Length: 236
Image (cartoon, rainbow, N blue to C red; front, side, top):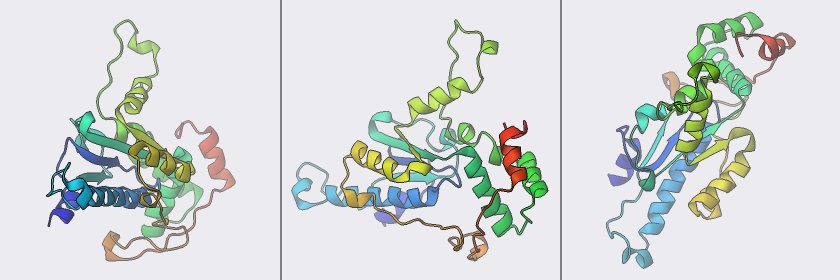
C-alpha cells in the first residue's frame, strides 16, 4: 500500500523528509519520531478542510528516508526546496564507547578489556573515527582558490559543507531541546515529537540482529580507557 511503500523503499530520492542516522547516537529513537512526523503531517494534509487546497489523493504518509548509510549516496542530488534533510550527532567518545559495548561486547561477546577496546578502535577506524565526516558529507567541498590547501585543516571545509547542506542537526546530549527546535522549524504540534527511548542500557535491543533480542550490557570506562581517549594519538 501507499503507506508502507513510502517508508520501506531504499531508492534514492530528491525530495521528502530525509534523515541520515549515524549509529549509536539515539538514531533509532529519532527514526521513530521521524516516521511519526511523516505520518502525522500526511494525515493533517488529508483532512477535509485541507483537501480543497491540496491533492485529495494525498498519501497517508509523506515520502521519507532514514538510513544508516552516507548522505552522499542516499540523497546525492536532493531538491533543497522540496526536502528537509536532518541528522543527529553525539559526543564522539561517548558514541565510540556505546558502539563498542553494543556491537562488540553485547552482540559479539568480546571481553570489555582495555586491550580489546583499543584493538577494536585501531582495527576499525571507519566505524570509530571521523564517523560524522564520512556519513554526513553530502558533496566534495571546494577549497577557495586564494587559499593554499596545505595551509588549512583538510576537514575544515567538509565540516562547513555539512553545516550548509543539512537543514537541521540534532544533538543527542540535548535531545529534548533539539526536538523542540525541530518542532519550531517544521511548525509541528507537540505530540509529533513526544518519545520514549527505543533502547535502554541494561535492557534488550530490537531483535533485528540474528532475529534475537540481545541484552544491552551497560557501558563503563576504565581509567586506562579514559587516558586513551584523552591522550592517545590513535584516537585523536
